Image 1 (cartoon, rainbow, N blue to C red):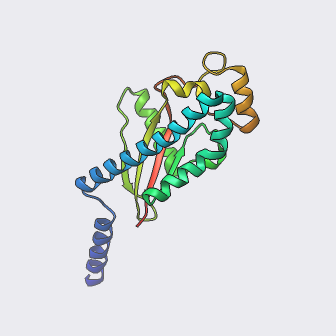
Image 2 (spheres, rainbow, N blue to C red):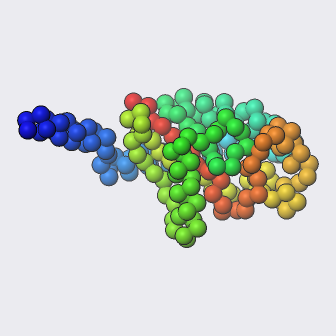
Length: 187
């Protein structure tokens, strides 16, 4: 009986250490939103500059080479691990984990049920705080992620296919769920 009591106390301590208060969740949500917005802004500004210099013919190769290093730079700046992922990948290096795919699928389910999608903060398998937030397609994203012939030109589509032969990140409309931000806070 005494051993059972010790085990129950130990399990209660573990479960308490693996949970967050509402205040902590809100703090990590605020920080996660700040980091994801800053990361989006950094990437968006660079892509916009490339678009102004040479259109999609310049922006797509830039994104192919520079998007991941830019994300890494932002990870180092904020001392977190930042990832953009989707169930419809362009870059296979951004493949979602099992948990990320669950969250993406849950967001799609909520959208189909006409419910809101909000950031999620939880403790992950590494016992780190983890922030997930939806990435929603904006109008300016459609030149590379929209429907071919409607938003994406045939020329742009051929550039994308030459750099990303297994591309699935196309056919979106404004407001669609493109994927998620996945930000792991280091201990």
